[in-house]
Amino acid sequence: MSTGLELQDVTIQFGGLKAVSDLGFHVAPGELVGLIGPNGAGKTTVFNLITGVYTPTAGRIHFEGKPVPGRKPHEITRMGIARTFQNIRLFSSLSVFDNVRAAMMMHLKHGILHSLTRGPAFQEEEQSMEARALELLDIFGLADARDQDAKSLNYGDQRRLEIVRALATQPKLLLLDEPAAGMNPAEKDDLMKLIRFIKDRYQLAVLLVEHDMKVVMGICERIAVIEYGVKIAEGTPKEIQCHPKVIEAYLGVSAE
Amino acid sequence: MEQFLQQLLNGLFQGSIYALIALGYTMVYGVLRFINFAHGDVFMLGAFTALGLHKAFGPALASMPWPVSLILILLASMAICGALGIIIELLAYRPLRNRPRLNVLITAIGVSLFIEYTAQLFFGATQRPFPELIPRTPVASTGGLTISVAQVIVLATTITLLIGLRIVVMKTRMGLAMRALSLNPTASTLMGVNNSVVISFTFGLGSALAAAGGILYASLYPSIEPFMGIQPGLKAFVAAVLGGIGNIPGAALGGLIIGITETLVKGYGQHFGIPSGYSEAVAFVILILILVFKPSGILGKTEREKV
Image: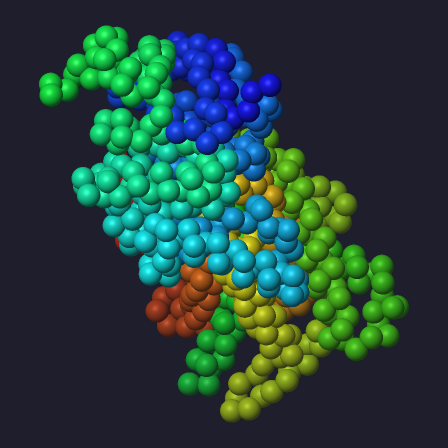
């Protein structure tokens, strides 16, 4: 039985439109896979399928051998899949720190119902949670901003906070939806380093949707290309770059 | 001057009860983005639950000093009505979670009517005297001001509950989950928050506060009937909108404003050509004015949609 994430013949239909069609790919534990395709190819839809926001019309999605569809999004998060959003969805008027804490609560022994009994065990847990949140914020250079409202951060920091928040759920698989969007070249370079760093530090598998080819080609070990919801190619960055179908559908568009 | 202060105080007592009810509207709106029109009826059920408990455990309660029996009845009624609120959400609103919001809104009106007429079936349509849980004797009449024990207790209870709610929302993990959910339900569920549990908790908490409001209200105006929740419920709804729907301090502030304005109009309206009978209309005039001039309410924030 395979571990990691496995999609087989996944299809989702909205009315007459097949947004994703017979899609299959695999992300092994610890692997960094890119998912690319032109605008509207269905990349975010794939994320929504994996995280339980949508249920596939047909096909199978397994994570660590267990079926994913049919579970609620919060249950899937508890299985170890976390994500960021293409259009930032932070808890805008919560502090940076509370954004991270909100994503940690499900792993606490003292669940959200038992927090009124503030015994020593609770305090200890609270402290270790705080330490972990600070470590994550520190890695992403956000520790100084911990008490600011999330909405007051600049765009790049909001994107970084999205990643921190996703990591706070202690995932085994991290889905990044255009993490480099809106970042300048220097920020993008930092981001690539950070993604590599957290992947090793927390032994993550990463599935990356990204438009910036420099980022995708720079860090992905394997890339799947979709167009109109159909996978048209899969391979190493080198293979993808000279794949005729990809050039036609995607890279050919940008005249470089 | 004394009369003015007296009116102001009366308005404060009245308003603090509106505030308690308004909190339920605003919290439910915060997590589910709809107005639970059955909320005023939970307020009514709070008063009837207290009446029932008082009847059932009369002799035992009579042997205790009144503050103890009051606290027991208050807590028990809050727990019972809180559970009721959770059940209402579970049976009536949860099945419609992913339906258009209008469906839920209309269902809420249906639930409200259902509770009112079911209550009428069981309790009858006539007014019933509410037991004297709090002595109605005046506690002080200094400087021409009269304040009853009941009024003091109403205010003290309201303040205690408001502080308690503030702690729950700002300091506990459940409160953090509530705030996260109200800001972005999709993100909160994808960060592992079980939204259904949080929504149930919110309904329970709001309903418990409404029940407390019902008991306090009945202590000030000690005659209760199945439709007693409609007017205070509507005014509390206006209070919640006035303060900024979804905003907890706003709801408390809105409640006070409505209560005080209403009492002042009752007391002084006739000097300005507004008969005291029209005081009931004040809340709704205020509602119209807010909707025209500041639709987001006093403390509400206008959220800009991202395009």
